[in-house]
Length: 248
Image (cartoon, rainbow, N blue to C red):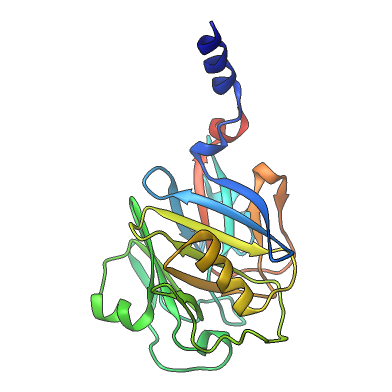
């Protein structure tokens, strides 16, 4: 009887876990939001342009492109971009490359080498340091290059300073060693690179993690009743799910 009652309760709960799981957490006194996705179960995609070739730039615009019965269960800006919102670095969507891999230094955080690449395939998601990505040359259905790396093979980026005073809102992604799980994180308070990287290394235990951006960091997490607007974005990563899985 008890078992039957528990099953009834579980089946009646909202089915967020089938799409992506988001929660607010605190680390070293600062608030962050973490969204965890299982690449073996969820439809993780990159989004840049609509069918007309125009850059989408907002979570609501991605929603408009989805087929009936589908919804954006999670979204986050996913890589740096130029003034016209085209990707700064390597970008692949649906097997089509829009921008080549950049391996040399450049201005800004993107050029704070080493930077890295997020590589998505059906059933897997991995962060690679850029030169390692170039060496291994993995096939990626979707890929976005950004920087700097936050964690590299278990170590923080060598140029991060423990006593830095440079604090901003920041977002990024870390992936599990087996390439099945991704943790997307956005800080809700300004943090340094060192603080942000420590969260991935020490709390999430991700051996590799990549910084996406700072000032324009945005999150779409319907289960938290959150969908950030404002700045127009370039590349966006998201989870597409059946509407029933996030509304029942």
